[in-house]
Amino acid sequence: MQLKAPLFILFLIPFYLFSQTKPQDDDMDSLFDDLDDITIKENKEVIATFKSTRLMLGQSTERVKANQLHFRISHVFGKIKGIDNFFGLDNINNMNISFEYGLSDFIQLGLARSNKPDKTYSSSVKLSLLRQIYGENAFPFSLSYYGGLDIKSRTYFPEARNKNFNGRLDYVNQILISRKISEKLSVQLSPTWIHRNLTETVNDPNSIVSIGIGGRYLISGSTSINIEYFDTLDTFDAYELNKNTLSVGFDIETGGHVFQLYFTNAFALHPGKFAINQSGDFFNREINFGFSLLREFSISKKNKH
Image (cartoon, rainbow, N blue to C red):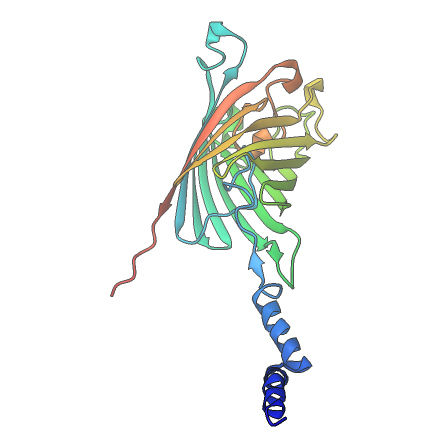
């Protein structure tokens, strides 16, 4: 009988220890609050909605980071008709060279030159106004503004028109709205307003409205398939031609380069033209092949120790 009491006490020790170490309800709530701070309450900007500052021909909501410089060269060749013109590669329809610089993480400045059709010099600014955020204070989309000024330098006929400098100016305004739906799929809406001080004919309106829609789908970590469509509203119907522009292509990322391949019915490579003009009906096989090569440079000064 003397051994039963000590054995009973030993049996109760684990329950006693458990009762002393069991956390209170307040402690458990505090623990879950800490976990929320680490996960749900952590607000982060959604990155890499697109691989480049351009979806294809048109701008994307991506911007050049501060103290970064993007150099891009783009070509559009002739129509893909057959072996006679080597599927359009014999004819370089248009070339565009551009520089884009990140003045800050939210302001991008650009300069560009297109040889056709008007030998156009372009200056631009892109403002990153809102960014898509995930977390407790989530925000559903990214919003940017793109503004451009195009100066046409070609010789006009009759030559008297060359004296009208204001007539050489076109203004481009775009609101870029994008959402990264998943790691693979991103979409964008691009309402566009273009004002031309001087039009080709008296029947053409000076102001034109076009709605751009597009998206990309990642095939792999470095490759995506892209589509982009600009639907010009009824403000522009000269020559009774369909002025809508469709482009389909691929992005291939290799280190500091982004290589884009696309098929399009556009013949111009700057927004003042490709958003309202094209060289044929995409679905009637009047298609041009084009590509662009982007190289990124960092021009920030290293910190001195």
